[in-house]
Image (cartoon, rainbow over all chains, first blue to last red; front, side):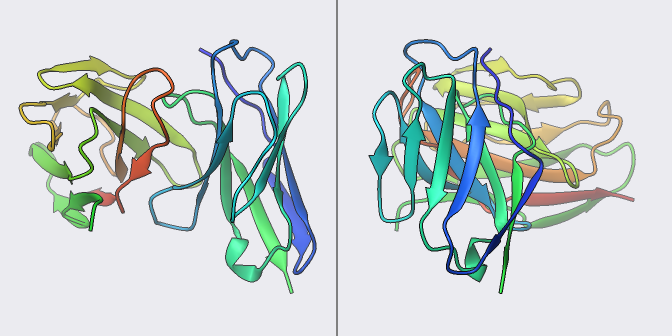
Length: 105
Length: 114
């Protein structure tokens, strides 16, 4: 099963762009990259997903490298409410430990 | 509104008792999942079901059981055989298939064994 590697924690200043990396070097050709976030003691919330091309929605942008072995989630203008644990997964069954993102005022 | 509902939100159990956590969805999703989360940790898959009357074990199925008699419902029973049942339990659903859309999560059930 394809797994992901993320830094355990990151900090970002409010109003700046938060760039969260994810390595998925064993991803298969037909596996999508999904990002979720979890605010303390709540169910995870879907953010965005992609296969090969970069994607953007109202919450974030997703940049996937050409070899698909890594990706970056970008929150363009981080707010305090973006403080959460962010999970990058390449199939629904396997969640890693995620990145705890703290937005500082 | 469409969504996924877990109950109860909080549950206390004495050692040796079985307890069943409810998960219901009205999203018409084929696939449903149960995850366990321990403090400061990620999610670990307990069981999943891709279609009615069929389900598969995840990474940590020992001490748990499930049923999928209806498309809308996927209850999880935590049996007395589960050695460390105190945890946060999350249910999710998706359209199904290998890349069948994103996961929709419930708000979770927090089980404490006294």
